[in-house]
Length: 382
Picture (cartoon, helix red, strand yellow):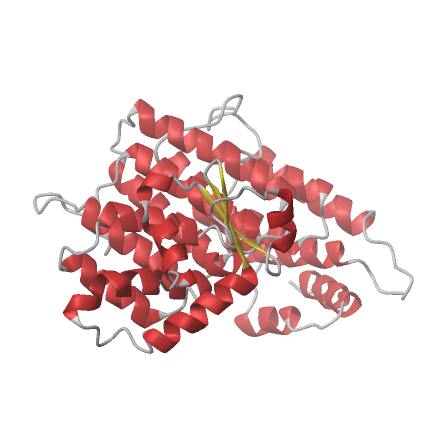
């Protein structure tokens, strides 16, 4: 009797919810070294231990080649072979999460009632754990499509965004956790952060004027998570941009972190002070300066007198002391960033009149020394 093809065995593991697979990892090579350590492994050539599924890369690619020979296209699948094709498509997507035809086939199977949508949601979570898969825009779009089918917005509920869903608070928490895991495995994951932004926009729509304690707790937890994340991923601009969106939502809902002074307190003001504190520690990271600019722009109003003085001191400190000439004789970039920030701030505040042409000329400088000289001349001439 012929043995079962390896791709069918692997697909069965991925789609069988009884296995309770919590994690998937690709193992380099054929995985022989693991087989030596676990000679009684009944799942060989795969390794399944306490919900963790290890898949040797060479075995996966061999399974993929077997699948594409059997199913060169998912656009025309015989009705009698749909179950087999579902298993095959799970292997294709595990290998290549940008395979549009495989995703469309699975959508059709869900629409026809031949694939359980909750099981598919669990499968997509596993796909997102593979670093190269987590950066796929199709994967995150497919996940939102699934959520929209499971938690559709009622016809009587007016939803401002195109994503017509009504997600419970625990589902939102699950989604941001999945994104965090995906971004840990693949840094600067734009499409994962975009998915998280969709969740945040939905949270804005779900939160009324009087915020429910469960939603408030989620916002505060998300803020704590994001500030810790940014402090260990200083150059992650997508994370900084998302944090600015989160801070803006919290301000709109009057939800503030513990020990945050009330908005009426004379200070530089939360959340700008968070970025200023990071800037003083890591001044040569442009992401933080852009985060401070975005925070001010979203705020809609300038800081009070004390806050403006704090920004003035920040500028003076860096232009006076920071960024001495390096080994190559060039000035450090922290001076460039503070000057760019200050020119932008003065233009936004209306304290100086700067033409668009002069600003473009200033920003086009291609070296720290040229930027500093041009910026100082620009400020002196206004």
